[in-house]
Length: 264
Image (tube, rainbow, N blue to C red; front, side, top):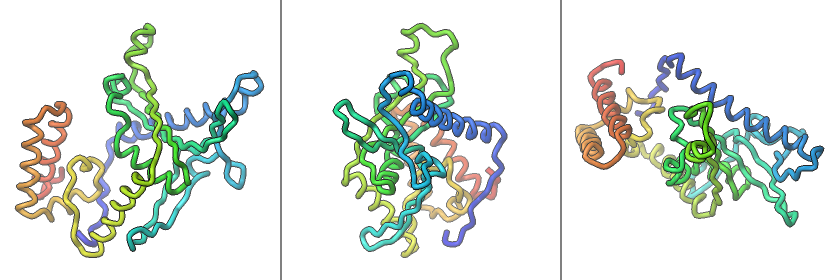
């Protein structure tokens, strides 16, 4: 695996459009907040949220907030780098000013993705961990994760329909030192694994956007492959949703095809 080159596959046009739609959704919400910040005071409507500004007076999001922070943790050194969706200032009713991070995620597969049923387990773990990284970079304890659904049930919805299938779902996350240490421990373990040449176990849930699929597939030992086959078999027998079972089966099929020299 060491020295393997990133695999740049051809992205189908619909995937490129999908990614650009997600970016446009984030841009839309950022413009809405900037618009409210500029005009709500003139309408005598209290405006509790506004974007923090950098040293040049630019709103703290995207390239205006780009940052790289060198971290030393458990004797290991690594960098956190990113461009968050926003650092805001919230003014409470008693006048207290709180710094609040903003993370925007798009959902475009089905209108049910922001329904009450889909929201029952809270925000995705990976998205929370992303906010934890930003909390370290920008010294922010509170984050709001907003899911915006590009798929709609219908144009004309009753209030009852909309209550069941809203196009936006928001979560508040308070980030603790324990959450930060958990993420930093994970990164320190990765550095250790790289130094010792001891690759971590393959996580099939993260396979979709993996840029080293061919190299990983060919490097798997017979025992590791058997373990993956057992994991996929257990998923098929579980009560997991069908889409997760289908995804696991596709991952195993792709691994086998790549091991056999296929294009996958």
